[in-house]
Length: 196
Length: 161
Image (cartoon, rainbow over all chains, first blue to last red; front, side, top):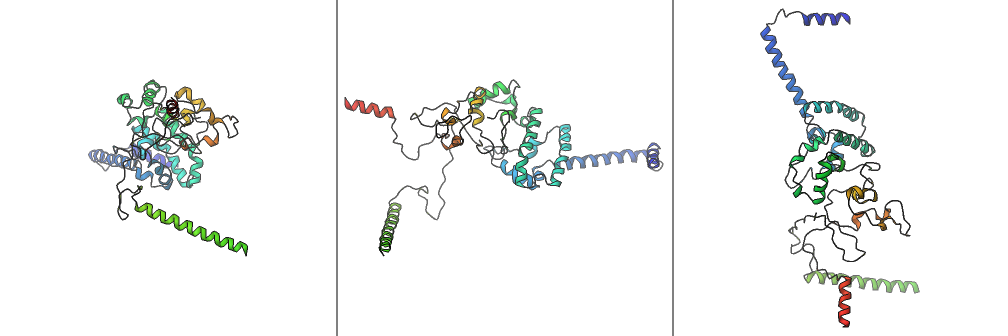
């Protein structure tokens, strides 16, 4: 084992005996583009709704629930897909979330929520994961579209305007504190803050 | 034997009643009674009315009589009221009203049917939209002849004079 590492290290250290410097530099550059591009393409492929609902766990539960909400169908036809809300847009955050998602692959392989009953049994835990994430990042995924600076309180209902101009404006509350269950059905809300 | 005759008479009576009912329905249908289909012919699809938007003014509306369940002055789209959660109660429950400044559900909602007070909303009052409804700004489909109690009293008093 030690021998193999030694040979490998020596190969890396020695200058190339057969290939020109130009070939290595340009070749390395092109290979870099291909690998990086391939990585990013593969990453983006997992960042689509088609990918998410290619598993029945997502298609038959959460996607069906989304369909009835305003984030799926509304007057202006702008809609949110799964990754819009569930995957951060910034690269580092996105990679961090994607690494977390390896746990979800584990769940898929071992069928953690592969029936409706199992899904319902896990719903509170799954919801709490997302609430915790959105609370921690100040509802970043909401704010990717809903920008507080451009909210027109005068065209909101008086009730909404009052809450947005006080608690939300002061940073006391964030979107997810009040807007739980806007895209999917709620779990048992016993013991959740802000619920009876 | 007696019971058989009795049964026979009963059957005859039933048949007469059913046929009478049937013929009256036919007559009613022929005499231009308004139906949900409107003027649309049976073999064609009628025009559907636009879905009215729900009033969202947050202004309390007066009740037409003291026992009337207050109407909802805001939208309730996608509010869940089920085994898991009750969205209405996240503002209108006793403990939530301080933060929400929404009216608390009336104290009758905490009573069981024998008038005993419970710690939480009585299960028979849990489903808010059984009695409370959102309002739309539309022309009523049928004329409403309801007269307020006070108007009735006033009319009675002025009739006496």
